[in-house]
Amino acid sequence: MADSRGPAADRSGFVYEAWVRLAAGADSRALGGAVTVALCGHWEHEGACTWPHNVRVGEHVDGMLAVRVVAVSAQAEQAVVMQLIDGALAVGRLAGPDGASQWSVIRAGSAELTADERALVARLNR
Image 1 (cartoon, rainbow, N blue to C red):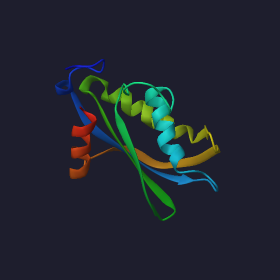
Image 2 (spheres, rainbow, N blue to C red):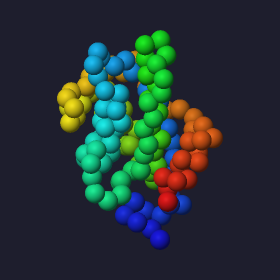
Image 3 (tube, one colour):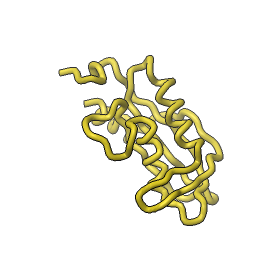
Image 4 (spheres, rainbow, N blue to C red):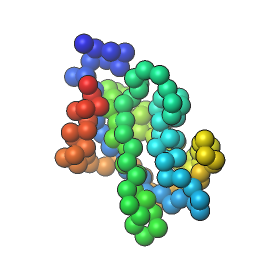
């Protein structure tokens, strides 16, 4: 059964990857919160996400964190979703319930889905 996001067959998954440096005292969870605010309006929202997504913040590498956002959308909306994600992270700041967190984006853009992420896309696309 289709929902407001359209039939699952019309949606596909993609990944956005960013390398960021957190400011001292920043909460890495703010990165996912910023993406969710951009895609859903708030990190706490009712109902299904317009663009289902998952944000994973990886290990520190040379003082940077890898942020991978796996999202699902209609092919025609992927550029818009990528721009929203990019804009959310480029702002470099989110005021959350535990205070404000800041970060700097070092580099960002599209990336290839891993095998695990392809399985995640199938779950997000339900």
